[in-house]
Image: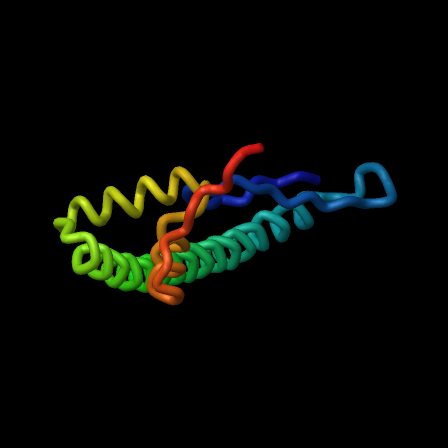
Length: 122
């Protein structure tokens, strides 16, 4: 017996197996249908919790990244007399040239005082 799980924005189903043909009577189908509503609610709540946790983690990473990027911009602005936009563009260029995430380039600069350099091709 296969029943859909009634969930908004998610798709799922519940499959129940028997070892004999015709094992599921009307009472079994009714009970299974009631169970799918509870199961769907539990799955929907779990999905909402996971989504909220992922969003919170991403916001935390973004806030930490912004802080280190701003620090790296400040270093470049002072050292090379750049504007904030120019310093950001410089970091973005280094990020692309080194194939590294911008926050990693900024973190390296803040931690070591050195700008990452692209590897030379042979």
